[in-house]
Length: 152
Image (cartoon, rainbow, N blue to C red; front, side):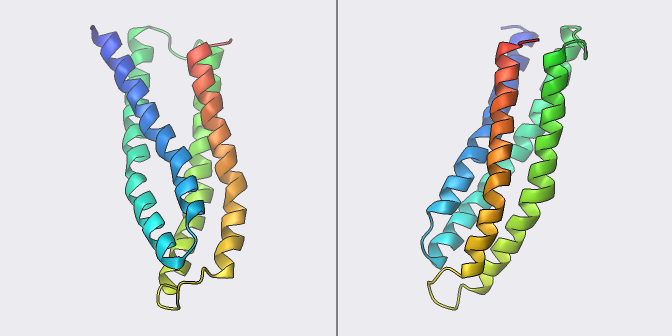
């Protein structure tokens, strides 16, 4: 396997490190039925959140390196659209989802000693995040399709 093959494998593994947790974390959070389950779920998702950050760094580095060795640059429209959608996805996750999740984690940690009943405020905050998470997941699918199919 040459340099191109190695970079491509690393690029694909990095995308899996991003996409996997992004699809699994919301499911884990929404499955909790008690405060202690929520606390446990947020502990898991906090630990899983490291994978997309590492994967994102590797994805960018390998992507740029692949563009350089193939002499593709930014000449392909599918690549430009993928990069734009990726930037939008990062803004959605880091700018909208993460700050709201921190607020939810604070509510959960404060209600830890108030019994096992999930606070009503939690449900309202999660309902506000669901459309943003769904949009981010749809962006990931779109980017993946663009990278594989290279339609234009």
